[in-house]
Structure formats: structure tokens, C-alpha cells
Length: 395
Ligand code: PSV
Ligand code: MN
Image 1 (cartoon, rainbow, N blue to C red):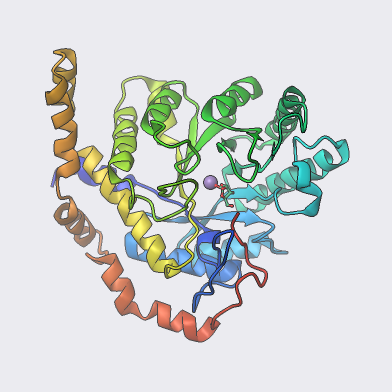
Image 2: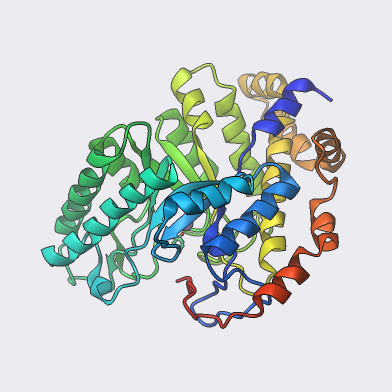
């Protein structure tokens, strides 16, 4: 095997979300899955299982207060003993009754203060967990034209983000996630990458944009957004998932494998770029999964997600860059396109099996998981927790 390819595959990282292991669901119903994790310790244990089988998922993102615990140092030790670390901290300022009209954009200064205090508390959690990234998503928005002053809301968002930015420890970052709509249906305060980018540029160096694949209008060219943000040095993170309609949070790469490949094609180009800003930006991206498995077995769904990212990345690594550049420069439209699709069409499964063999990993992680008895043991030990019984109900 080509050693460059091999070491690139070994360096790939995908963070899995704590909330993907519990009974999370849709806005209509959350089904209880036998063995689904009931608390943050069980979620970390499941994340460790995904890492054990794939070798590329060594961290787990936390959502606060869903994963609140009195002793983060103890949680950190628990995770490290199982071979994983605690990753991005995701503050939750969208579930308290106080947030009916928003959190950091709320018209009432007292509610804004409550939200800000929670965000600052999460920066403290980062210190205890050793997390580099504070991952910010806000449900803030309005349902009706005239409901609130849009420019005032923008200024309130800016002010809160600035205050959080300014207390971030050295070496850490805030990732600003945008979303077109939902739960607000008229205006969302951080509605697209441009809004997130403008705030980040104004706020400072530690502010970066996070792209969630489910947060765009239909047919928006996400890989172009990725290319633009990479070139500006402002792409900080990903939330991988798949969708057909809106923010469906399905297993990444299932409905849109070509889109996922095109995104990875941009990321690989940036990793190999001669421009230092683009290259370091690509190297520091937090690759995370943000999915909500409602009818799927949680751990197997997460394994599939990690493996789909790995396949897309492997295919992107196979793009013949010299051939592509030559075709682009010659204006040979179809040769350029064929160069890309040749890589997309290649079957990387034998290559990945070889890579896994060399790393002492199971050649087929899904099969290994099914044979391991992990799911049955979890179902026996944990039972079937009532959905909603202290669990996040996503959306
Ligand atoms: C919102 O839809 C989102 O994508 C944000 O990242 C949240 O933190 C996550 O889902 C979980 O609700
Ligand atoms: Mn997200």
C-alpha cells in the first residue's frame, strides 16, 4: 500500500456524540432501544466500543446539561481508562422554559444573562475535561415578521459570543454552528455560514465556523462553502449526518454519498495545500458526528457513520490531483469531472481491510461488533430505559 495513503488514513479522526448513544429521537416520538446508554458513563463506554473497533473515533462530545456530572475529572479518568478522551463541549441553551423567545438573542437582558452564564459555565467544564472546543448552536429565532427587531437580535448575539470568546483558555476555540430554520420558522439568528462567518471574523481568532450537513436549504452546494471557509482559515468543525428533507440526522453518507465525497475532496485538497493558512485550518478541523438514531441500534449506527466517513476520505485520497489540475487548466471539463468520479467509483473496501489488518483492527468492524455480544450485554445490564426519562429528546 502507498505509505502516504496509509498514514493519512491512520491520522483520520471522527468524534462521536454522547447524545447519539442514548434514547434520542425525533420531535414526534423517541423509541426506546434495548441497551441504549442511560447516562454519560454508559455513553462513554459505547463510544469507546466504537473506537476499539474502528481505531479512528478516539473522543466523545458532551452536551451540557444532558451529560452534567458532579465530577468531570472522574469522568475524564473513566474515559481515558477506556482509551477515549472527552471532546467538544456543547452547551444547551434551548430547552429551558426561559428560552421561549431565544437565549443570547432574547429581548430580556435577564434571560440573556442566564444563557451567558451557562455558556461561561461550559467554558469551565472544558477546563476540567481538557476539551479544546466549545461547540455552539442556538435555537434562537422568531416565528413571525415583526416579532422582534432583527438588527437588535444580531447585536445581542454578537455581544454574547464576544464575551464567551474573550474568556476562552489559550489554545481553545469556539465553533459557531448555523442552521437555516427550526425551531424558529420565520428567522433564525445564525441562519447561514455567512452570518456565522461574519460574527467569527468580528469576534476574533478563536472563533470558527461549524458546518452541520443537515443545516442548509435543499441543493445548497456545501462543498463550496467548505472550500470558501477553508481558504479564509475559518472552518473549525463539522457535524456529519445525512438528510433528504431537512435536519434529518440520519447516518452520514447514506442519502448523499457523492456529496460527502465532494466535501472530503475539498478537505484533502486543503490538507495538501501549499497555502499554510488553508493547510493548518484543515489540520485543526474538529470532525464530529451529530446524529439522532431513533429506530436504529445506537452503537451499530455510530459504527456505520464512522466507517462511511472513512470510506469517503479514502476515496478522496485516491483522486489523481496532477491529472485533475492538468484537466482543469486545459479547460477539459469532462476529463476533470471524470478524474473526480474515477476516485468516487473506486471500491476502497479492500484497501481499508488491509489498513485495518495492519493496525490489528477487525477487518469488518460491523461484523465484529455483531459477534462481540456488546449489544446483548448492554441490553441485559441496562435494560430498556424509558424514552424521555431524563434523556435528550432531540429537537
Ligand atoms: C441542532 O439541530 C444541532 O445540530 C446542534 O448541533 C445541537 O447541539 C445538536 O443538534 C443536538 O441537539
Ligand atoms: Mn449539529
